[in-house]
Length: 601
Image 1 (cartoon, rainbow, N blue to C red):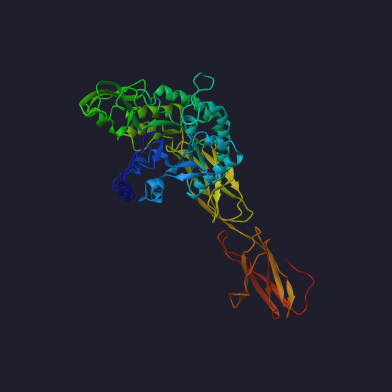
Image 2: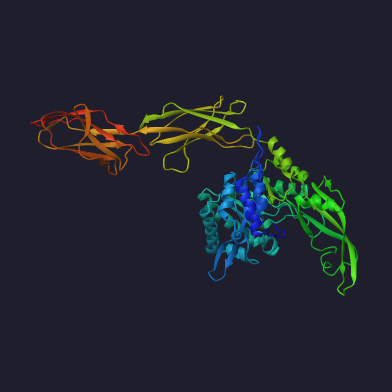
């Protein structure tokens, strides 16, 4: 990810974002009977919001997650602390980050921002080697994720590969692994994702190992995503950006050490353009860059056809590399350093990935059942580049799982089980047999679904399960998605639990003396409100004030002295967020002058 950065004006970004939020420049994502598998992901840099954001939203049917390229890690020498530095806000003063995040969230994207290594040579490896400073970095990153409610973080620490000497790699690899493990524990405790983006690695038993400092096999158990930067194959010399065979070789190694679903294959939205030969004497203002061996120029894929057409050439597709290339001549006129007129003609060679190249790489996603593609960057691609990806994604779309749930009763007494029945099929009504299912519940005031029970579908795709609930709960069934089928999520069914109300009252009492009605609630609930009522002339009248249960769910309702005769009473437990109102059966107490020795319960 080392392309030159170009910064559009703040006003142009603001206009573009306002149009995006207003919906005036974006068509709705393509809809189809067979929606595509969401295999495309990519980076959204802080300096190209006006192109990357609309491109992402306009292809939301194909994109599950995005990586806002907005942060870098720096070391503060004064405080001796590592800090996560925000790159977005200084570059986009007129567009609040919250607006951009709202657009991404409204599109349904998983948001996993990227942090780069902004420290000096060997600094980050040194910090990771010390437990205290390693933990401090973990906390800084975790705090960023939590405070912004991101879905996770993506680490793009390229300094190990391209700034530090490769002689440091044997020492860096284990401290990098320790850091990834510690960060993984911290993020996973908050149910957040850890993504890692690195250059390529090969099988370590082979002569060419790649950037082995990133220790894929060691970090595999701790990460949720691996995004392989399978581009920048040719930088100093003309050649393909990321040839297919080279990309496939590193993918083979990745899927040998971790589940293929974690692996994302990098695709380039840019091309490079090298000078290979020069005739004549170039003007002094370009002489240092227009010469063989000079640094290549870069261009974005969407401009490639126009660049070729400008010089009257037609790009050709290289089947072996899976990329487009063209050669052209460009003349430069001007003056020498001495002021004399001069000109030169440069032969230039360009390489880039186009729609065919993206389709070829999407085919690798299908072949190896990868998590998907990762584009540097979203918005660089030509208009048709994602159509080939979309066609592949449709052909490998998982079967949609349809799950339905029924429960025998919506209200049940505490302590009695409920029976739930569920059916899981795919779209054509074929049953899903022998599929593991989670029965999940969520009660009022809870934000997360919790596991209630596990079950497995039978040969007809059905489950029947008895479960005990202790409070009002919405219940659903859920099955994990696989490569072949989507996740299954049923309707939600609400179940009310009627509390047990146990009452102890005397059969008779002496007139003129007060007495107590005692009891308890099941489940034992502190702070529940109860009131005693008496039946008078056909109406229930409150006797005294309401009381609340103690820490064990017990209560005591005082009854003032009563005249001789029989009184009819009942106890009512008030409804709350977890339980409906519960009224006891009515009971009688005989009030007379002599207190009998026996009490009833």
